[in-house]
Image (cartoon, rainbow, N blue to C red; front, side, top):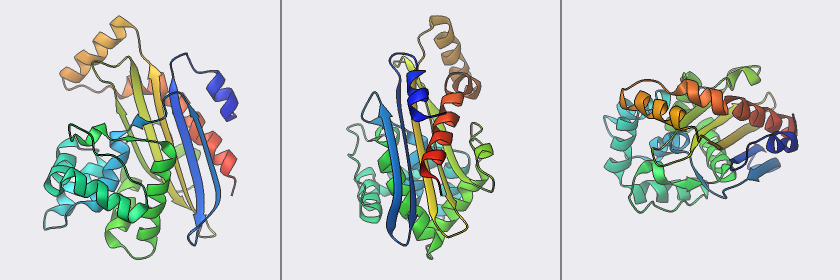
Length: 246
């Protein structure tokens, strides 16, 4: 399905972004990006591997970084984020990737606003660092390949793929956010990075009440994100793969 067909089928009030890049040897031979709706979105889970990469090292780094990436653990992410300092983390991301994100006023790691293209740029730098000898970056990409949550994105790729997915639905928000980033390396050594961000309307009072009850009770809401957003996320990833070629 084309980007145009996907965007035309979305309900009013939707915001989505998709971006992808093929990069080899420091060049960008092919990039693609599309956006509908809000120019910037939050996608806390997708940034956790980048926070881990730029957090202070120490004896307990891997013990916090691995579950932050593999299990998307918020407590371990906060340990990395606050233990290093939000501004330091974001400054280091800017130094290593060329992408500068503004520190959120409340300094919560989940409040950083991004574009899909910025996320792709940052992950291209992470992937390149790992493939050219940065052991911590290499470990992070390996952990992404082990992450369980993927909203069906892995099946769109023929081989092993590093994936980081995430979701959020705030009590004060009338949409569900579901997002994904993928990193892989093609046989010719080209790195391929794809990012998809979605924020789709979620207006039903009964649905919203059930969603909040599940969260408050410690239950899973993955099924709601799959029902509302899963097909769109996979369609956008698939369209980005097709547009990139390679």
